[in-house]
Length: 313
Image (cartoon, rainbow, N blue to C red; front, side, top):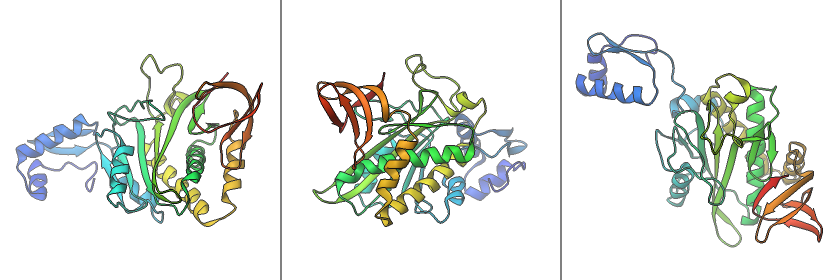
């Protein structure tokens, strides 16, 4: 990275990092296997053909300077789940603002028992640790705020798009999902100890497995162009920082989040939905209540959806 696009000899690299030329060759092969475009040969030297679109701390940190996320960025080429790692680290005392980014997840998780398809170096798989001074009953508002932050980040880079928020934690383009949010917490009865907000974004996927093609999409599929994951990740963390600071410091932030979420969602007002909750219910959406839960008008009256999968009919 310090000598991008310049040919650097294997001998020089070996000297700089204190290893052998054969070990340098092995490491170069490993980088190539991870998608880094390195040209050259041990006899002539190596050249980084292009700055890689990898979510490395050195790449992301300069973009989020001044936010709570700038100082503790952890990167993994492969991990089970960034949320699992973040929850464990939070329990061990990791500071607020810690960020966990992965190129690939082998056990990515969505809400409930759902998995998250996490192809290598095509999406953004990101979890952050927050320690808000709030009761656990307020946790939903963080998911809604994270959805707003994600929507703002996409619009910052591609204002022609119209991301649609689907309660409580999905973002859609053309009716298909490109982003999911999973919020988990550890809390006492009246106080959140720590909160982990996990965000999975389909960025540069060109196709999906057969079972996902009808319901999933990516920013690349929708726009026809490749996106910089580093740039989008920076925009997301900056936007999330803004939402969190306002939420933590402004007593009037909650009504604003609920209003903006409703304005940015085509499905929380006047849409027929089926909710897979307990025995299930069908009805027409009537907005969010004061805590952020979805209200649905059914044949039996107004029902509040606290959890469950909401399917738009």
